[in-house]
Length: 228
Image (cartoon, rainbow, N blue to C red; front, side):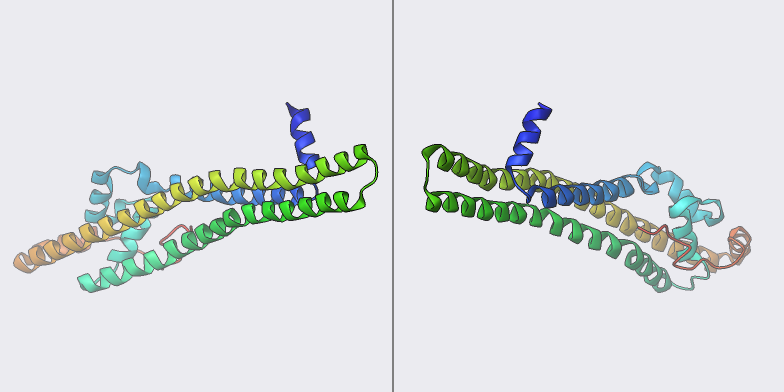
């Protein structure tokens, strides 16, 4: 089996080396991004847990807890909360989008590099036909040229097809993360408004809320989030 793979590899010519490098970069980038999104805290966090953290931000931990503390710290209105959630999304989602675009470029380049091998293989074949000479030599040269023309695009497609599947999986995870942030924002805004109305109706509740508020320096966008 390994011998056969090596024969195919050698028959593909020098274009197989760029394809090999492209395959490594493609799947390293894709698997690393997929693992990063799959390992995000929100995926293993129960809804009742982070809702309890919204009511008591000082109890939250991890990435989600930091986000909750950041958006609620010194928030004076629902507009402040919406603005801070926009800052969170602007820090987390664009790096993910850039990596998805880079991965898409690698996937699109694989068949094109394979097509380059086809062009060189056809040139070798035509050169063998033009040289003429003995039948055996021409046949061997043509066979080498045809192999070089066929194997690189096959390898390029073998890189591109799994890469496309990987991109779709990553995009689905990215949409799930964005949906979680939107759900969290909606709940935080609703809780903030209901809490503000309750505090306005019962001033003593405000003092209890202030006592439960987290102390210490206010988080910044950089410390409130784990970079993507």
